[in-house]
Length: 491
Image (tube, rainbow, N blue to C red; front, side, top):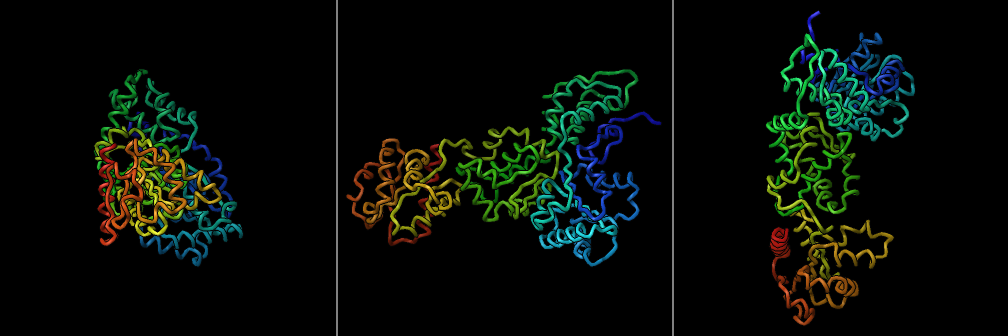
């Protein structure tokens, strides 16, 4: 038997032989494969050998004779998948890249898997393979599937199993890695990342095959990590920049795409639930919500082949998932503050929940609406009452509003029309923010048909005039640009 070589021991593609460690739920995988009709979902990042592992398990059980492999990346296979419910006895079918299927095909597949489970079918078994949260996504299309299938996650393993993998590799190569704890910690439960880092340590120590005598691979983990990250930058840096800038770069905005990517890097399981993320990061709700709900995030990914190769966004569940394990390592080790500056963003540290808070009389709703829309185009955070209606429900409205105008908004923008001083809520809001004139935090907008005496204090400070006879949208865009320029200088 030839001596083990590095590329065969610490493998970065396919299922390893020397360092194979059963995934945490491997027994559950085998049990499911022996259970007639019961659906199976294998989920985890692309390129880590999920499909190969399933095929090996089928061989181990002697069930590999009637296996059909289909991929949602192939148009002809998508047609085949759609016909499965009427094809009869097709044996075991592996549907790979489930997340790439159209919604209609996913719905049909979910319904068919429910039917097979109810019948305990011995003639057809469906195995779905997809990225993280594939099982949750499948259940989304058929809620009563939840008790009719098993979900087996890959790349979510306890540290002791990652260490077991490294131990097997060391024994195969007759070496000792001097930074095993650091590799285990950096892998965060990922067999793939552990393999990749161990491979790099061996390369740095000039170990490419089994050693005749026990040898210690001595290297700095930080040096290895930096070298790997630098090399990955060639592939991932530009696409990260394009993703974070989006189609319309807004230097003074809140960089919603950059924050989304940063939040994804901080997640433990390679998938970011954006609805939950926005609940955790209230200061980014408006800007991130804008790009998510209006389809800009999906377009940002789908319109760029390179970005789409590493990220997948499911609009139904609002989940963003990494498809490439190397990309996970890259963004987890990103120097985010430096990267943000190099992307061209003025700042990504925000002391206020809102950049602007609009205060106005109800008669000027159209103006407030136009200004709000124009400001949001700059990817800033705006307090505008209709954006917050769902949060204000059941609240004491005055108690809810006062902190926003007193301190939570960097700038308060009162729309000083002739009706403004007469409205009760305008007076309440004015009482909350009038002390902030001295802090240079109030930017008045005077209406051309309003008497200057309507708000005398405001005339001592710089503001802008709204000409009631000019075009609504053009004026809103112009004033928004001036306000955002002021914000950029402030930051």
